[in-house]
Image (cartoon, rainbow, N blue to C red; front, side):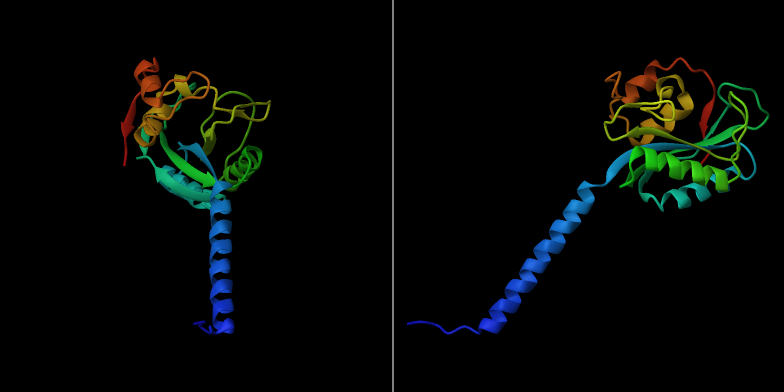
Length: 193
């Protein structure tokens, strides 16, 4: 005995099912195009905490913040200044390329009052650096990834270790935890928030 099916109903079910898989496939494709990057934020001028929050809010236009470390109060590294820095590391998921992300970061810094004068380290309202971008290594005059001074800076390693202790540095093949344990930087880094 043959059953007679409602062809229109079956076609509708098939279309809906196929659309679901197509949508699901697109969602999977979108997530596979998203890249994980680790970024450090720092501020030692003005309302330091507000500067960090504004930077985070603006970075969310480039992707999604997945994790944020605590905020740390740190002595200036590489120069002397009366104001300490507040630093925080975030994990950012983005579809921007490393160079597009750098461009957007520089726009954010400029909009928050960052000035780039002369050479060397100076006080600043905001400083945003890309530490890692997936497992990519970039060595150009405008961008170096991993950031070349990660292993020398306790103010970077402490918050980074909080959110990604087992992340391996692409060049040294050591974990962030290992780099922090071996770090010879003796500047004070203390939890602020």
